[in-house]
Length: 226
Length: 293
Image (cartoon, rainbow over all chains, first blue to last red; front, side, top):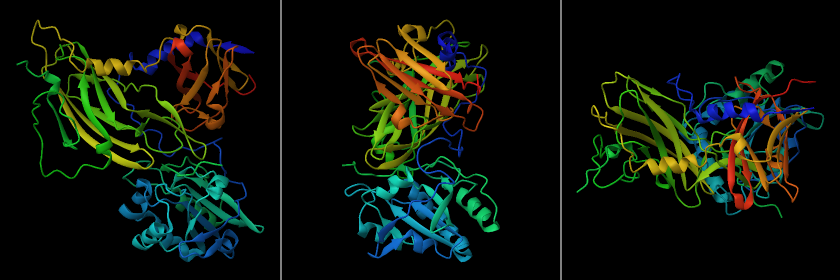
């Protein structure tokens, strides 16, 4: 059955234009709706198996998912681009990632960062990533995925885009996918860190309450597909 | 010489160097030379405040705009369901006696990046408009203070921020406010405001089960751009835009409920391309159909 909506649309138009909206002095700012759940978006979702990967780190060593997660309670995967202001926010201007690592690496949680930027794009290149790993004292490997294959397999959209994976069979299962925290600005850190909350739940053997949020940050600098 | 229009009394506390002088010799009242170096984004997106009138009468209304001039190749973000980036954050205050309306955002462009990412963006120039109304007994001029934060991107992204101030003087008794030179900037912005639904002939919006159908018999292309607080558009990359044929164009959209007060409504811009007849925009704000209806 079809319902026609043209008539109601007229009233909506006014609302959209804010013409009749003088009753309030508050401005509907774009900061509203921070940290909302994402549903139905493309990409991997909690409950999905985590695609396996085998990539080289900044020292040229091959690192695969199976060896990272083996014997651990969880693996945190961070999509990374050292040139992105949102990555700078959490690695340089604040200690979000360093704090996470300090707290959870001692509790059988492994960490890895993946850079899916294509050659010639912002944040790409072994030397740059090696330099920033040392400058930001990142204690976990940064893996190079310049073809973007693994990023696309995960549906990684932004830097950072976070995944928390728990061991399942020979691989891993995603229990959290989305933003690092609930402040989507380029400067401030949120008061809720979704990854920390997910890890707390995993370590207690509970299910993750907020298992999916909309990630925020720079676009992953994928190359064009051939 | 002609005196500068009153709205030209504009000063940027942050990013002074990047803000172009409005016209002639604009007095800069609160400039501090030792100010912190402006953020990198200010170089690529230069913001200023504009108004459509040169004064405001008690009981009257003025349109104030935040307008950006954006470098070629660079862009800013709408408050849409963007896969990446950050929408312009704009807060504006006015003195007592003035009522600030809601921000009117112009329709953005849909932009697809490698990796099937979809963002809703503005290029070259964008103006966010805010209607401000004066009470009948207002005694003070309209001093507008604005705080702006944004992310401007080309291949890479850099953040920017401004604190801007503009003054619209009170009209003298008996004086009728005249259009200011910047009224043209606000007029340009209105070209991207939604038009009246009936103004696009042979265009319909309807539900078919759980699908929202946008159909235009004369349309060459239809694009739907969901607002960030709308119900979530499923797979915006594959379904957000469609090109039609000689029989017209039909866009079928599916949504899932999102959190927040408007998460059960479909809200967003529709862009309708009608070839030589031009481009029109509509605003959709519809509740999701109840399951099983």
